[in-house]
Image (cartoon, rainbow, N blue to C red; front, side):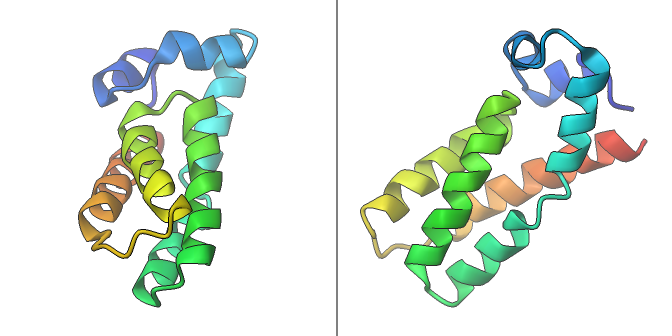
Length: 114
């Protein structure tokens, strides 16, 4: 169940996220529920599989903004690292960072559904 406590246990900086949402819990929860359905997660994965670093950068950068605005730290940290590597077009294996992002997203999605 999505609560402030479960979000804290997940690792989100709830106080910061709530402040960006004018301390309106319902609004914050609604945005979080929308964020886990963000198509950019799948598009990022596809772009990385295709080695399209430019597209991957765009999707990672967008997801970084979403996760940052909602203070979803377990998603924000690895996607931020990925964004900076992609910004400099670093040719590397992104699978570990992608796995962290998708695992955190999946965990958050389960909280939203229960």
